[in-house]
Length: 215
Image 1: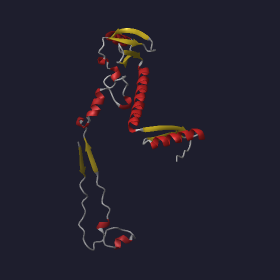
Image 2: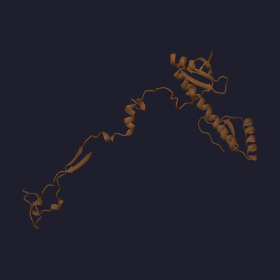
Image 3: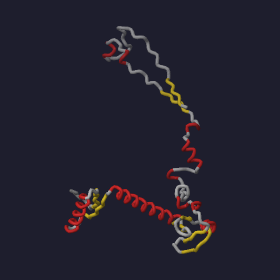
């Protein structure tokens, strides 16, 4: 809660035409009528009164405190099963699974409960590699290795999505380096003309070291 209060204004004598100031000394201002509008008023004092109230805390800040902090200071708690389908073991309909260890070596065909128990006992992450297998394939991961595995899977998925979109749009891709020779350039130019003549769109990727001008 914030309040603002001002100190009372400084009282001044009423202005009288022809009044002469009482200043002494050789100053020329004493010989002229006083000009009250030229006086510099005393500065007003601004007083700000503030009182802390817990109601000003946002819900987000309270939630972060309840979770033990947030932002850069929040401790990593590992992968979240709710946001990663590969960690949702309940998706498995089979009673048995084919289990691989951290080095991708075959452990054997075990029950789902046994696979979960092995992961818990060794403080490992149990992730689904394939649900299409008979039985489904699961693998044990160290947390660091699983983050790398998940990143690679997401990267592959994005590439597949781009290729799928390009295929639907009839988009053709051509790649060439900045130092491509004349023969290779002629081959790609011929291919680009062929695609354009067929009604497809062509996108050309090139890697430049310093400055590259495309015509």
